Image 1 (cartoon, rainbow, N blue to C red):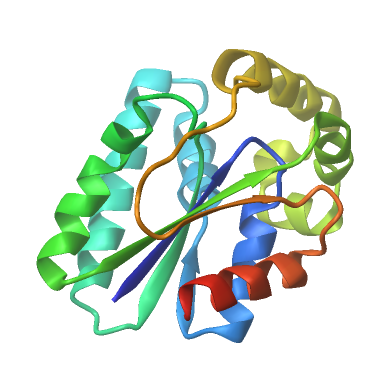
Image 2 (cartoon, one colour):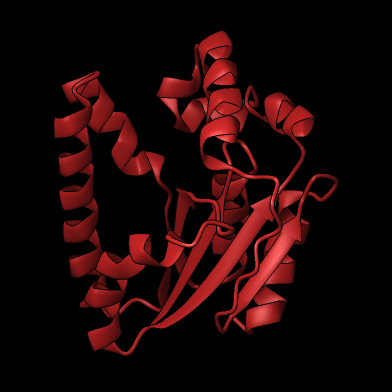
Length: 185
């Protein structure tokens, strides 16, 4: 089983690249907002409850996927890989998939904020992410998240099966092909 993690800041193209990667491999896509949207709809701004529910939902889905016999899974998340704690955040997923012999692949996407603000209002993003449809609020959150979570520091990731791609000027299908070729998926 192959588990591909696609990370990066808001509106960098994680879901869209995942969609393209799914088209050219036998991997399935489990993008972050597949759980975020229903939890937001039900729990609203209750952040403590929301975080716990999101974690539990994702664990159940991953546990079931791990025993499903599928080739692999693409997962997306908002994560700055230049921060030292990024690996600790993945510990629950590793614990689920490692006993099933999973191989892990890490993709870090980066693009300038100006391009990401443009991508923040694309039809595909808004179709799959209802919480992003208030563009003004979503843009404000993107900028706020950049300050809070994403440093301008270069990531120095030293794990096997890692690739960093600046997709500022690359189409999602091109990025997906780069990932597929790099990891032999």
